[in-house]
Length: 371
Ligand code: OGA
Ligand code: MN
Image 1 (cartoon, helix red, strand yellow):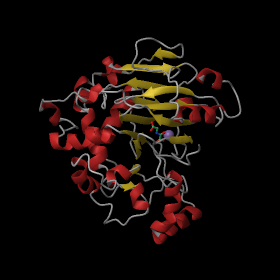
Image 2: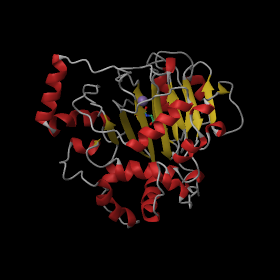
Image 3: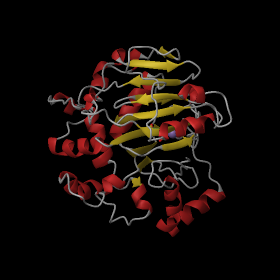
Image 4: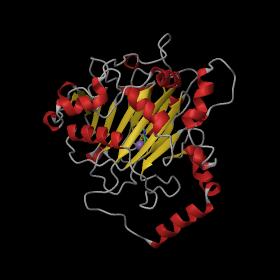
């Protein structure tokens, strides 16, 4: 079924997007590339990484396996695209999940809830949610954590103007910068600066529409994408919106790098794959670190109480962190009159105006989600 839809055609991407988004009957996933499986796909080849660029010690301190152990792949026809199959040390994904839910949701970071709620209402999203999260089985209104769709970090992406601005910047988290810097170096991009982040929070029925990430001013820098929790189908297309895409699973811990001529390709996430019966969480998330040694590095062990909330959340969710370098070395934002006006308008009119762009991403995680 899927194969017949991959033919070159005006709407090949849209068709495949709808195919995987369908719920009833569930789609056939047999054409989706699975990098976690040994059996190869003719499009897939093993990619070489820069083993010497990150020491074992530095990798360990970031919660990563030694780079020489990473299973990295390329895809024929997509130069610059790299897929790293879960290089995290057992237990260390917990830290990033906790950061995404408990730490990065805090001010001054911006989230979708800020678009229609006051700063006081969106303060301490974690604390406001965990109470009812622990009382499982009770029919209660959805918590803020369950309503969370995106968080922006560093240069905060403006969904309306599709731009970053020097006037809307807050310090990028050190820990995520450090992780990104190491992953980029291992992929042949030393000196990567994490300047903007978009964190996506997917519930089991969420999807992310067909788009290109082109708002960054320097496209020679890679875009990094980290996945945690439930598996998603990722569609990687071409330079034109209608080009037929290749489908692949993104599992917990997987890292994707879009660089070179793959940096500006169309892509989308049509669906979250239902967890297999009896396995609400991927097995790599069941592993814990009981050693304190990790705490000397970037990542800290997550206490049991916090992990209980995170794991309950992840049973029906996927978290994706995308990290971008916005400016090239020595580059700065062009200052234009229209930009100055846009920024002033936005800060003056506050929430109402921003609701429009929030509507675009609606309750779904999605840039103008089309379906
Ligand atoms: C994005 C994006 C993909 C994903 O945030 O730009 O494409 O895997 N995310 O969620
Ligand atoms: Mn994207």
